[in-house]
Length: 124
Image (cartoon, rainbow, N blue to C red; front, side, top):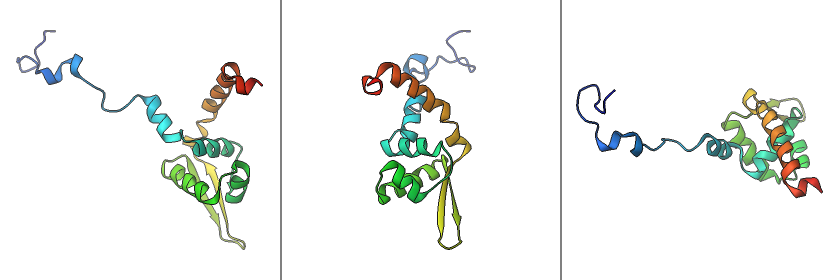
């Protein structure tokens, strides 16, 4: 095919392949932006073991209540975490992974394997 578009005109400089830039960053960068903060990773990792109450997550992650609340809200908004409330006395809030959140299990396993091979801190 020639360098002309379907109308027969030469392509403008803005549309040549060498001048094109992607509309979004690399998928890896996008992924890290979604899950990459320290607290998000810790919470997502802890929830891989099943549903947890807020105070259980607070205790397991050592996060303060404000930070944990913000992280859980962010993860819920991003579709990684579901929140369930039980109205019985005392009122309890439970958090669990969505299908999207559960899909990170193999990713965590691969990162863990890589870390044990390449990071001295994990091998000590």
